[in-house]
Length: 239
Image 1 (cartoon, one colour):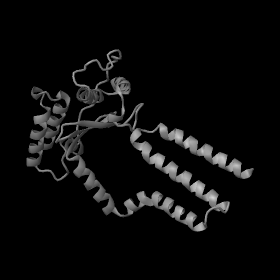
Image 2: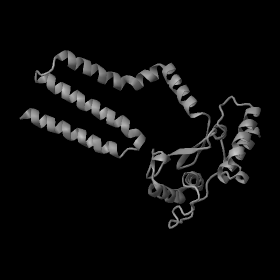
Image 3: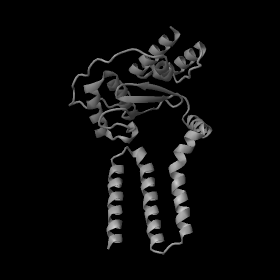
Image 4: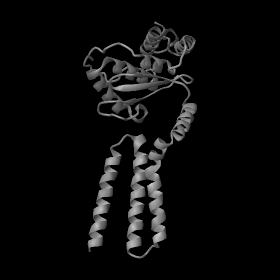
């Protein structure tokens, strides 16, 4: 009887953790589900070992696998080379990106494809990626941006126009005026907008600006807000 009660308690705890995992942004759920599966497997192995249905060697190997999985983030921190190799691989896969950040959103523009992507920094969908949100959720986010920050409205509108070309009625029934945003850039932010590193030269800045404006200039069907941010970043960096 005590064993049954213990198993029921463990099953209930795992189910609660599963329900919590379902509330996470989709890109974080997979890692959480893997952790839950590992925890469930460890519990099963422990139960079989205690009841004499599994040799202790099998339990030890399972324990080592679980420990190795949990220590992976620590190993990456202890060996920066692993992290740098992973980052280089990611950068090679994604190419150069420009990043513009507001109070609610962080938006990325891929220099090669011109595709916009981003993640939510605050509000009802905090830590969600924009590509994970459906039309209704995006309109809810737009309504929140309109209450919080004008720059966030402009960034999200840029994304919506690209994802839903030709549509202009996003959140039409929710028209609260946004507050004014505070302007001003730091060097780090200006470099991120142009997709450059700290060691960028004036020539690099001019070249990055030219390449981006070829994609963003309003006369070529680009985006007014992002084009203005690119111009602002260039002017700031070149003084």
